[in-house]
Length: 352
Image 1 (cartoon, one colour):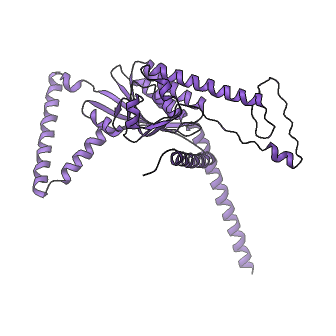
Image 2 (cartoon, rainbow, N blue to C red):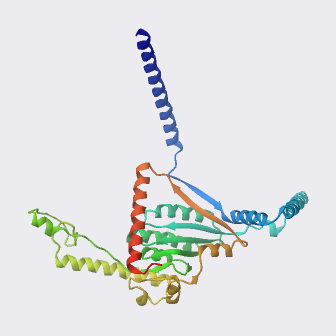
Image 3 (cartoon, one colour):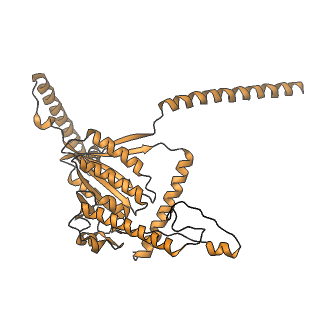
């Protein structure tokens, strides 16, 4: 029995030591992580190089064994000749203007917006990074997908896109799936808007709804007191009894917001018949082009391929560091957004 007790005592000390040692290591790592921790990281992906590698790989796969050997031999020979020429030019101090001239760049930013528009935080970082290095002949392509959301969030997102134009850079927005309401508020800032044939575009309108359970509370003898300083500090509430005056003020605020929305779109697309399209309706891409909401029917993929030879295509993506709780809440919010969009689409147009 003594042996067992001694063994258990030794085991307890060993476990305690391991736990204590692990805790110290964890504290050191955490402290070092805090010192070097950033709010996020910026990723830059060369889509031109990725495309040419894919093209080269596909060409190789289409050759038989003999053709592949001959092709590889030719490629190696050409690479040696090119390297030799560059080495000789470097020794002589000769600069080939065609080779040395840097291609203009097309920066590609993807924005997939949710109802609360929290993605604008990454967007502002990405645009700031682009503007830090962009030259006068560079361009920016925004791959936009959003059903809209809160006014202030999408207003800020549209202002971020306007920063690109204010710097004199050409801005193109590509709508592959949906840019409605706040999404279109962002899109209309661009010099050019392209859309896939069946993308959802438009919905220039404002909507708000508030449930009211005041009658249910009264039925169960529950009183609600609401005290405000300012006649219209609250217009409609969930719990209190709403007045006609409050309803009228609420509608007035919606109409004023709609008016600002229409003015904003008209400012950036002056040729648009705003009264004809600002009815809150949305259209598919082909219909949207007929109404002047978009300029061209194509996809972001084809748009990138159009510039693959004459421009360097760079995808810019800012990744924010989030805690586990934030990641879980965002996942739930995105799931709710997808469900909302699905219901909205089913209620508006027939499905295929």
